[in-house]
Length: 438
Image (cartoon, rainbow, N blue to C red; front, side):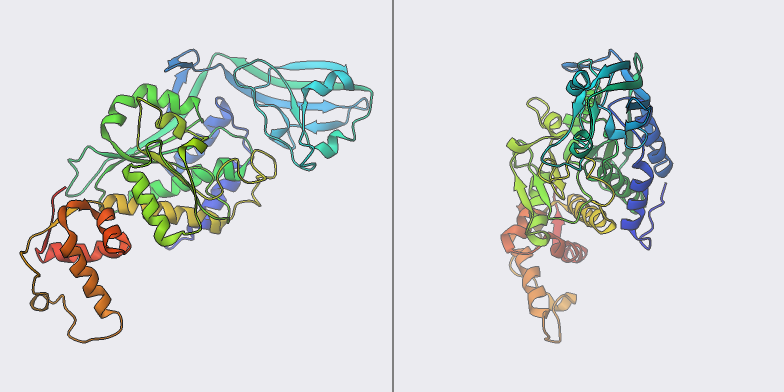
């Protein structure tokens, strides 16, 4: 699999995938999840789709019954649909049990959900683990309802089935392909028609996988999962936790990466992992308006991956963080909220982080005293603007590469971007003035 084309506008490509996936009604189980995974599998032929039966114990949880829905609506006395699942799949409370009832407005009201402060937005509401049914509608429509008889229909099923998730593992290749260490990427595929909170994560993750497949070599193995949020990550951990604890050196939950607003960074629980230091360094040099959040402000699958006893080195680098933007968990989180530019920006930011993870290592100078750079062609023979700075960076690398600092801490110590150091270090290794020791 090698379908990544650097000449294709990656933002437009990802936006097209999001547009295709937007109408699908997803939940934590069911055919909408399978349909979404099937679409992504065509883009990532190496992805395996796994099914875990209902009733399976996954850590402290149990995989629930599978939910599927065909139709749902509220009709007035004339038969006109005033709330229609076929018009917007947010109109039904997720995991609603089947209902066919006629009732008065007063009887219907407890089953209705709206947002008075956002009169044109349909809220996203779910009830995964308690049996109930309900409808979501804009406050503006709710205010038009008049006393009378209404027909409420939810044509759904809750039956033993399975939880579905996607997994792709890209083995390391090249001179270090005996390295068992892994980088972990996780995104979720369980929300209905929302663009930033749902689809931006899977499409950016898909683009990252295609890019990783295009690389001539990879130092590390990449474990990538597309899971239903919470129950999916718990399920995956229950199956793979020992090997992930043993091998994972860095990881990212990829979510809310599609809008054009400022970046957001959520640290791991410990705050001092390789993923933390790499991401903080990238932010410092490229995204200085990024909002940084402590793990106390967690809210996605990092809750599971970083939990005590699991302790995976997982962070999130987002655009607008979940729960902080006004459109969050409403129908206003639509395809107008994300953009090709926003998606491409997040792809580029995560690509930068992964590139530095690949390049990160500990180096040691092999020469006692300052080496003579001129006879190795490393010292410019013509003095011009910028040439002195490059030599200074090279000499600073040699001065502080004492075998105790990795690439990022070395770059931090000498006050430059690690990306600037990478080609210089490569040249110094070529000239045998520097050696990698870890």
